[in-house]
Image (cartoon, rainbow, N blue to C red; front, side, top):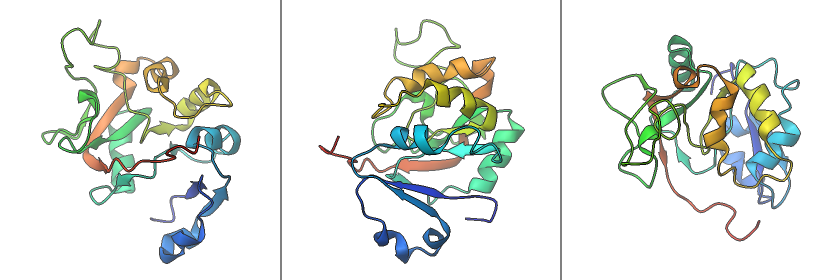
Length: 196
């Protein structure tokens, strides 16, 4: 990671020293509260006024493969395409995911897709447009201010939040998209298990 990023790791399992083997982890901020989730942490530690110095906020799950991802290049593409809420494309042959969030190899970014028949009442609404999954969202400063207010204090998994994100940017079908040129793999490692 470059000096342009601050890394904040939220530990729900109490295991913080295991990260010491990674040099970048020594520069990270570690917050540990057992049996909590990323949205619980985000509501308490990522208040919009606290993170206001940052242009973008990445709120990612722990089970993502980032071998094909470069954060600096990602931000360049987000700016180029005017995205306020985004995510990297997901490897299409790994795990279950929406069509919208699957990586396409023929473009830098996509903002719409076709889903299964009957799943989209309108081509500009989720899950066919204005949609990213909750596992790896990236928010602009302004979008995060809105999203932060949508998060309930006791939110666990964030299911359904991805369908509401479009309320935070206008026009959502142009400001929300998937960055195909920088992609990740959802490794589908069970997280939290029966802890919550």
